[in-house]
Length: 217
Image (cartoon, rainbow, N blue to C red; front, side, top):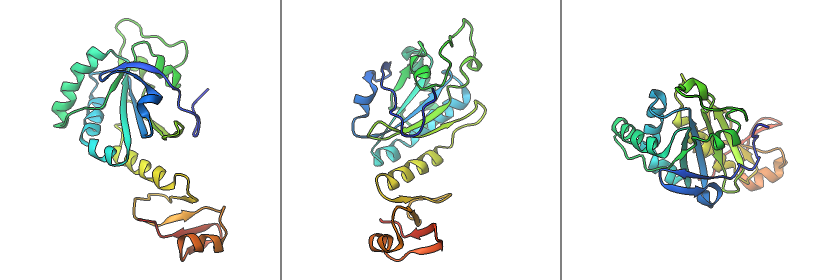
């Protein structure tokens, strides 16, 4: 069954470029971004991991741990890291999971249960391993995005979505289309106008069900 929003992200133990981890234990009280790749030494994925390396400080500011996964071995990952760092001009210090067994890819429903890697396989055999998951400190899936192999992921959008998730976490607000931090937010319908005004100040009421409030800074 496919993972849905608010499902508990499956726990697992795996070897990584930073040693063996237990996923939930490694995540601790942080948010997490798990992003997957169909094979090492592939051009689009190399650029993506390079951008993540460049954004290390941005994820750290957001109390977010980043972890990659590719269906190749740790030894291949370590060799790939040197290419990533050459392209990015930044150290790729986040762990990359060894998923030669396809255990994690299947656990997160990126491959069918009967999938295997034939000899001489190409990235096309594991092309569906192209998903981003944002996971909360409660270990629940907050967001997932799946990309084809030909489309590089937009990590500015992943950061924006992470900001929106954190801004709305546990509070009665939502973010409108194209929202970025500092812009007005939407007040949830669980609050009436009086309660919303008391909590957030003057409202900008566009429609009875669409009420904006100034974002808290």
